[in-house]
Image (cartoon, rainbow, N blue to C red; front, side, top):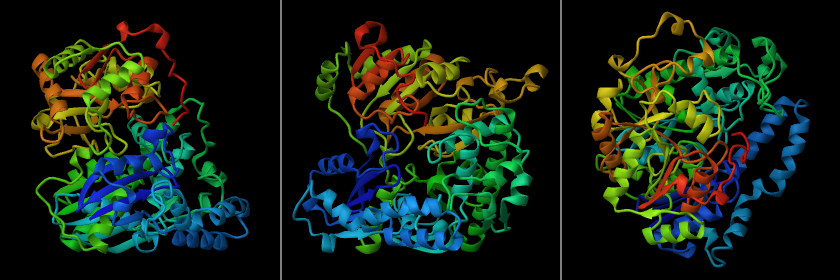
Length: 610
């Protein structure tokens, strides 16, 4: 049985194909169109999934969309009625789009799919899944657990913003929900907007900025913006927010509460913004801990699965794991809307068709390496056409050259195997560096990624060594858990250094692996497993043999505002547009100094701020 799942028309459109309960392929449309967070119909991602499965649209049993447009439109109408006459301008802007396109998505999908087949049986094969059920299915069905509580937290689906479900075998039942406009995801997005970052893409910047500040405004938020109950349920005071009916996330009352206006994106970040970021992160941590404890108490389950955009907040995830309410936590690596495509397909397979589910001790995401891959001859042909000058090395020599370059302080573009599905690069489309270098974090941000200098980088660490370097002894294959660097590896700060505040902390080396140690001694950890990514595991192992350190800096292979690279040509263009030293694509090794200077590009401002 083959099922195609779709996420589209909001942000991060994606497609995923499931065959007999196994995820065969999944990819975001942005990787093909090169438009960050592309919301359009995922034509390229669909074609990739069909090709990877060796089938056509007519060979599918079902096509499933990840939410129900009529329920979403019902929420839109009821919200505007409830807040009328305020927000009429926003309503007037939204209504034509809904009436011409979004409300009639069945017709829109049929029209778009005519590119693939004129004869597809839409009457019997097109399905729609509720948004939070798609998220929950994406988290539970690929998880390694026979039973688990599934917690979904995001901005909003149709009505639900927070939901809890119980998964057992091939069943999944939602038993608890919080509804719009009361939303943890939208609360965090409101602060993303207030601190000057882009909503639906800049939330992780707020998370990265938080450790530079102090949670001075946590009480102010809890006293004014949100009514938080002991069980984690909450209600927002909507008089401070504008997202129900307006064109912005917050209003003047919100700004007066904090005493400053919304930061313009081009204005400097100050201690105030860092304290605000620290405060909303502390509030988020408090809420998710209360919810998790209550769910553990209610259900008695020892396993928790997470999905929805809030599940990408790895700081809160790490605190949930350390809190111990649940013994085991598994997080869908594509926890945002893109992952809804996987969930919709799995929900149709297991819940609608009753397909059995198998757990074998590992998860069903295959390391999240579900995107396109390229053969060595194809790589060589593509690079030649792009004008690249490269050496074709044996695998042994390629790994050795890469490890030597990394140990010598070079920044390396690493392109191997199938592309990752989700927002994180996990060793297939990655930029790598030496974590021991005190200048690597700043140099990668400013000279390679062309982004804000405060942004932290993640460590990739051999799974067998993680407990020796970090205060974590658990799997974190998808870079979705934060834990501290072990105390014996930390550097004692001088009194002058301890007195520094905010961004001034940035250039102070805080451990023996400073490039991946955040200012609060934390790190967003990826554990690398030999069974899911043997080549990347082998590279880190060789780096460990050369340096004694089983850790590499791992960041996504792109520059600020650009989608992660998909093809060898994407990788080469990015390589020629920034200050990477070495590029390795398959067995092709490219030194920057050997390339044609005429092919150099300026990527420093090629893409919009993300």
